[in-house]
Length: 405
Ligand code: ATP
Ligand code: MG
Image 1 (tube, rainbow, N blue to C red):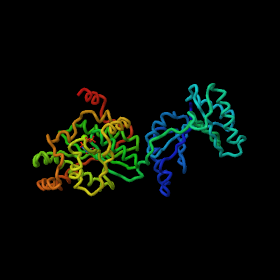
Image 2 (cartoon, protein in one colour):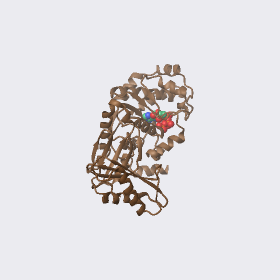
Image 3 (cartoon, protein in one colour):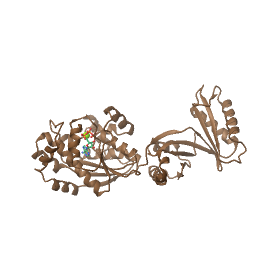
Image 4 (cartoon, rainbow, N blue to C red):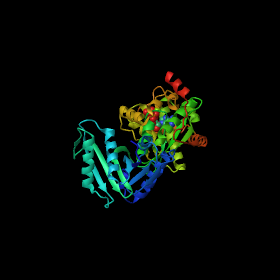
């Protein structure tokens, strides 16, 4: 079926009162960004819907992108024909053909904006319904919950026909909920947490800690590649890499091993807070869940969280690992997350981290360290880049090599 346009319906934003216009503007902006490489599209965002005119562009390629844009509730690939009954009939039959299997039920639902058109809605429903009954032996009319619903709109500039509504990503347009710093490791959880933050409209900037020479260039590239995998939901994502070697070495040399992990995490959080302040971020997001590993007890979270008053939001905190994995697979980060490039935490992981670290102890131990100096030097070494849709950071060979490990 050669569709001519896609009709897009907004989600929750319709209920957001006076913010509505800015939500629509942001959604239109995000949609244009996501579809930037389809030059023939004409995108118009109206108060209650967005219309994307295809002008010959393949509708499947476009809807694959729409599926990932937060703030879109559902959409309908639509075909526009001239305001002639014969043209509408032909298009309706072509649409039913897309889905028809013997014994299926259907219904035609016409709306009419152009009251001068020679048939009213009931007549259109009857005439088109009759034509479909004739064209598909065995098909049945059903008013309630038909399997095939043909929507027809008679407008001033033509007749528009579509098959039902296709459910999209929902959520809120990215950017409408302010900016947050996402602590992104190379693991499974933090990319999923980033996805969930974006789903609620947060513009995330990735903060990644790396420790050369203990961690490889590939580990850094893996975090960038994970970021690239999330760009289709939002366009470009900022990636902030923070050198963590000096901090980790210093902690390792000066502190008992039971507190290495807690204190490392406290430094990560302090640094992320400082970066958030510099970049006007309002909150910190991370991929902590409860109960997976030593760092993920409530005692441990409390001991780590002690260093900041900024909100620390943990979108996956109460998901089971299997639920997180299912989401990681859905968003396409799982296969990359399980590639075994060492990250800074694995390498400096103590053999037996405390599962119930004490806040006072962590504070005491840190008095042995030049906390401010360490933080300032790490911040000075920070690098920021912008990661765009479709960028690649690990080459095929590296990915294959990792497969063999
Ligand atoms: P993930 O799968 O996201 O790595 P995890 O289950 O392995 O999570 P931890 O290793 O305890 O859990 O890390 C908890 C959180 O701390 C991560 O989800 C991430 O938000 C943050 N974090 C850990 N390592 C880094 C890093 N190198 N850079 C940035 N953030 C990190
Ligand atoms: Mg991890």
